[in-house]
Length: 146
Image (cartoon, rainbow, N blue to C red):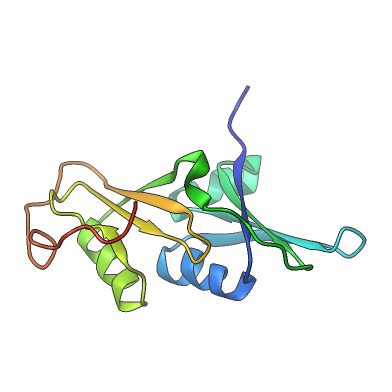
């Protein structure tokens, strides 16, 4: 057995791709549209996983966009997705500058939580040793749920 992907339903594909790709930094690996089923699947991978994704189609995040709108309950019911990043502070700054709320700031230089436009909780972890505590993160309070 091996891990393939996590599927996340999204309500606005453009907003979701902006978050997942432009702000978070994942790369679109492939896209499939199914007219009969009225949905689009977009598979994403972290840059460090791109070669493995191309070879094995894993590990990936699958964004599922159903063309006919339907409401989805809170995305936290399955837990969260986690990614290691080279510079946690830079990743949080890029997301914050892009309008994303940092729900659990990286006060410890090790971990932060944000949410996608569809409420999916995402944990960001510093690669290697934690960064030294720094402002504005060190004194920033939690916002909302994470």
